[in-house]
Figure 1 (tube, rainbow, N blue to C red):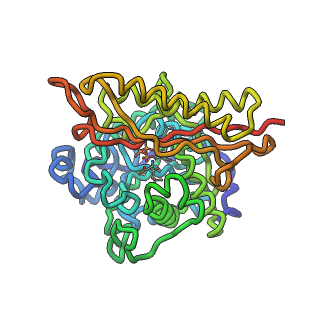
Figure 2: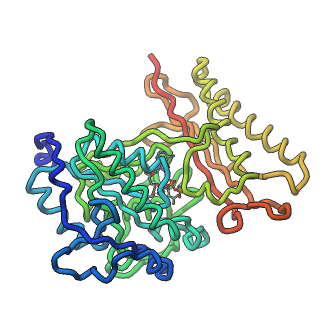
Figure 3: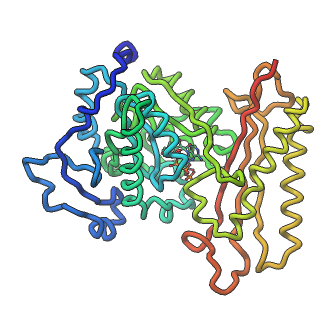
Length: 395
Ligand SMILES: Nc1ncnc2c1ncn2[C@@H]1O[C@H](COP(=O)(O)OP(=O)(O)OP(=O)(O)O)[C@@H](O)[C@H]1O
Ligand SMILES: CC(C)(CO)[C@@H](O)C(=O)[O-]
Ligand code: BAL
């Protein structure tokens, strides 16, 4: 496919003039009630004059099956159009939109996949409460708004052409294999990188991510796929998978979008509530303190990570000194200084190569809630937050 992916870089608005009907059903089977409340023109679904389902007020196609995405894809392959895929699990925020904006600059057609992949959630993780189960309508509205913005910007090659929202029966045609470490089924595993750091704490996570990305790549057949720097280890795992399985696509990693106080945008931030949200900056502050050491000339692990640990310890001590109805506690899972292509821990940074500083903290549930306090989505369960900073090579 790479040989075919060198087309003329032409812009064509005409490509987006498609007949359409609009539907708003949730892609999530367990949200059928909400989904039907959101439908606008379901009755016309089988109208022969308007055979396409689109996001309302937009030309964006909604493709709900592998067969539908393949049918949509075929003519673009023949036309040598570049297709860029942005895989997401919905609950779209400005981080996702940054990926889509980047894809629109480099691809004639951007496909955004919205699929909450059960295989990457551990059996005791938050699959049931994952925010995207309630955001399909808002996600469609964000995509339609962004698409209008992209259309007005002459610097783009393409726009959002389709949202791919498959069902689990379609993505796992032999049956969903389960979320257990010992589950049997067809999986893609990428080791050792997938066993380190996030993989140590979430033993089925990268198996689930690599497996679903392989499926998404096979279904959509993009020339380019866009991932966020926020999930740095995920991008390293997928890059390794693309290389080792000879997949004909380019991976693009897009910088992390942050709140003004440094917190990386993340769908799971909605679980925090204001009290824990204020303390959640600890991970970014800790990593920035470590980065400062490197920028000041340090190469040694203890010197660099010591600064990050000091920030985490001070912040925790400050919180523990407060009354239970005021404080927010957290546990540091890891703070890592690793090689950028293997994610193996480093004792000393090679300044010609640089390194990845990364960390994960678990924000614990509040111990004592104040009357009427907003504890966050789903009552404020424990929330795992990750972040990272790239230490660029220096001469
Ligand atoms: N703040 C961000 N900046 C840039 N890209 C991001 C950001 N947050 C997520 N992404 C990227 O968006 C893609 C889809 O991520 P996903 O749907 O899991 O959202 P998320 O915010 O990372 O969710 P979660 O809170 O579950 O980790 C991934 O490639 C991810 O790295
Ligand atoms: C890449 C991904 C969409 C696969 O489900 C997910 O891990 C994510 O959203 O980062
Ligand atoms: N952004 C990665 C998806 C996950 O944590 O499940």
